[in-house]
Length: 399
Image 1 (cartoon, helix red, strand yellow):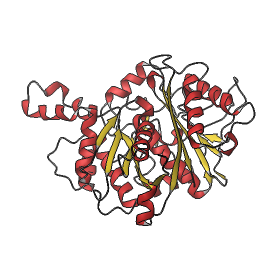
Image 2 (cartoon, rainbow, N blue to C red; image 1 turned 30 degrees about the vertical axis):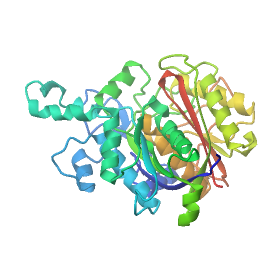
Image 3 (cartoon, rainbow, N blue to C red; image 1 turned 60 degrees about the horizontal axis):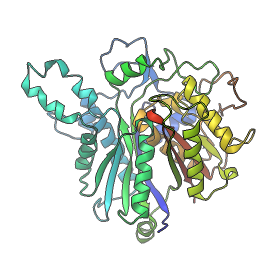
Image 4 (cartoon, helix red, strand yellow; image 1 turned 135 degrees about the horizontal axis):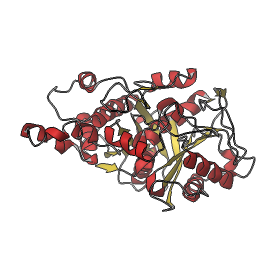
């Protein structure tokens, strides 16, 4: 049964803002959030930059009015902030009035807290409670408990496409009548494990990331959380809800090319975009803006660029930009925050700039939008590609 999937609320916290409005102001004014590491101990402090949220865990706990003695991870705390804003944005007063679920995504899970106490577990048994918070799903349960949600709760962890797949799954649950309303998105905090892991892969830059630039050297990791509220057409009509946008298309594919690298011909990205366009019923020419995955790694940007040319044709690729130069790559949260940015682009009729770009890549004739540009935008295609070849594409529409 085909049902329209309305987006009625959104919430976000990232290195460029602690809510939707602050994020929009930063995007509009070109204010990035890439900085030196201050909020956790690492030997890379001063050498590597990240998209760090400058609120401590203690400050987050106070803002959320939680008990000080807890084992709640930073990943969970960030998710609570964003999910709460999304629910308030959607004007939801009774979360359990309709069949409501939460599909959250994460890569880091509770690593930030388990690695902090790792060497003291054996000598201090009372600290073993922090191990319980390690699982990825624990963050989703903590968010649901904070919100008072009684419905379905599940977790998706497909690396950097996780939040896109959470959004996609939420849409399918509504379309099939399983749920009436779903809170979907993702949350990830910074941790030593991910920082050291990406550094070992040699895909981190020692400066600011430069998506789609010929001289790009790698990504900056970031932390963030973002959730959007999906509601069925029936609920929207019954409650006379204001609709921010619609999720009109989605696609997921896996080219199984490599554990971490994208395929040279962008096959996974190509298939995901192709499927999303097919589900949306839109023509290629209908896409007004692409929020590219654009991690600023040599492999990803080349692969994604090739895939876009394969889909749209040489010289016909829509205007595009990567917002990761603002926030860093926020892993499982990336598609969540970029869903919010895609909706903001449509609401305000602007394309956000691809910061730090200087030189066009020599492999193809593609140049991102580098200055804030006003444009009437009806359909945004947003890409998110993960390790293991897991590629996902979402299409957001005004109507």
